[in-house]
Amino acid sequence: MPATGFVLMSLYFVFTTILLLNMLIAQMTNSYEIVSRDASDNHFFRFGSLVLELIEQPVCPPPFYCLTMPQEIVTAFTIMRKKCNQSSTEESSTLDPMGTRVHGKRHRADGPWLEKQIALLWNFLLDHQHLVQEENWQNSLSKQLVDQSQNLREELMSRCDRRFDGVEKQLKSVLERLALNPMEPVSPFLSCCSPSRGFFPSPHPTAASSAAITLAHTAGTPSPDASNPKLVGLQLPKPVAIEPRSATARRSCRRGREVAPARLPPPARAYLAPAPPLNRPESSAEDLISLPLCC
Image 1 (cartoon, rainbow, N blue to C red):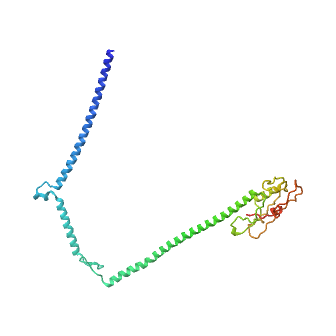
Image 2: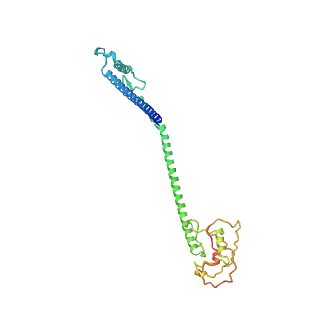
Image 3: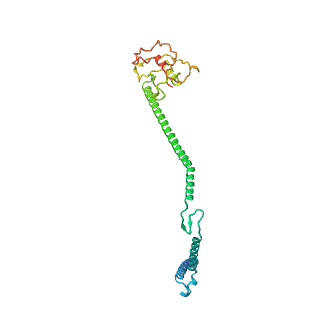
């Protein structure tokens, strides 16, 4: 046990000594860096102050001051040289071909030469005036074209919006009426175009209208008892066979053209129960079949 304690104590002292030596080395290194930095700052400061002192107060005494500062001598020589060159240039200047300057003073030109210069300037303006007018005309034309295209686009968009709104309102009204009473025939005045254009009947029934007529004339189809209790027990006739029109008869929608009615089904003879007469005597099976359909 005493030997183990001695070994542990020895190791403790060794490690402590090594750690203290490292700390001392690091502290000395930091101190040396701080001292060197301060010394360099002090050196730069003293060097700058010495330079400023030498600039403000020359080293040589007053009699030999000009020898130590040659910059002033060079500056004075340069200024004198510029003044001499300027005076010699003004004295040597003579009347130029245009007659504008004599000995550095303004000279009024003669009458013919002045008139000639004015004529040349006026001709130049007249020659280039059409270019300016053409450029202005092109700019105004391009602006007008842009405005017209914008107005046309806005007008077309407004017309399309109005027509779409009218068609949407008509379709909504028709769907509401069909939802309330599916047996009610569609109004013949319904058109797919703007209301201002009037009604244009269709020369032939469409697939949707044919399917509606077939469904309306299918035998044994349950009647809408909830929507119209007067149709209880009513048996509709057999499906109607609608013949497709020929290619020559398929013409575009025009005002005033009549629609060929489809073949009428045989009259219904047997009913499950006697049905009371409808409130709309005008809407019969014949009217429903010969109804002009819209495009």
